[in-house]
Image (cartoon, rainbow, N blue to C red; front, side, top):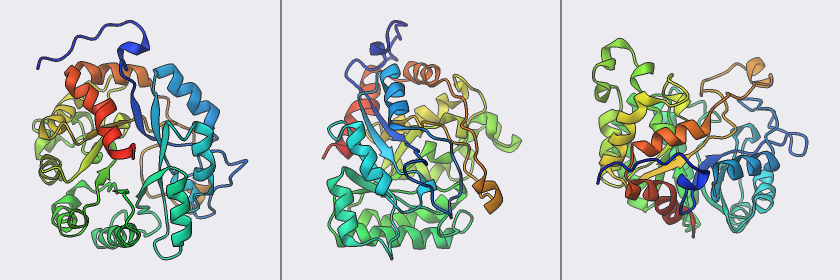
Length: 316
């Protein structure tokens, strides 16, 4: 099918059948203080702020992703979901596999949580593949032991790790029937962020082939989110077209869209002093990015990305 023509009218042209934002945060440190062991100190970004944001864009449903600044304390998450509207909001939580009780996990499910994200900062695993596998296995065990219909999300900044992670995922996560999600284009890069050796052929960058194999086989869901983490060409991020098309062509049923609102800075390991200092959000033109993305997809692909795929994964 040929790419759809974008009519520059109202926001309804972007979301004629509604639309899901599958990755956003809420930060309210006055009501819910951050963890003392956090990796980042974001400014307030409240429920009302997000409500204004989603109405401006025309988003109708969302998945609140627990901010890692709160650690594994999901008290705030359980409070934010009903404020956002439990009929239109689902959540991705964070747990401590050794300390979070079964009762608390069941409470999270009752409050609208439908998956957990692996906090690699807690494991000091951002640069260690063996610790990443350990963390993934520990979180998987908690989900399967409770027979919860949840997904599992893990995002590594070291894309080359996927060569070893892919067979591990097949032998563990997929064998248990748990959907695996990775955020932000799996942190594969557009040419504007690649070293010279990969600019001419970005498909040769580390991790590209094993990630695409997992997507193609249906074993990995990828969020086309936070383009500013993988491209320098804001506001339209035109060099991301090749990566969007690669994921969609690999498996149009395994792609999701998320805003990453309120746009925290790029992932990195910070010193404790850096982490305790309030860090401003990035200024992003979300509508410009969405309109750019829309031009690269057919009507069917857009509806899968924005409505059908997230509904399949999160509506239960």
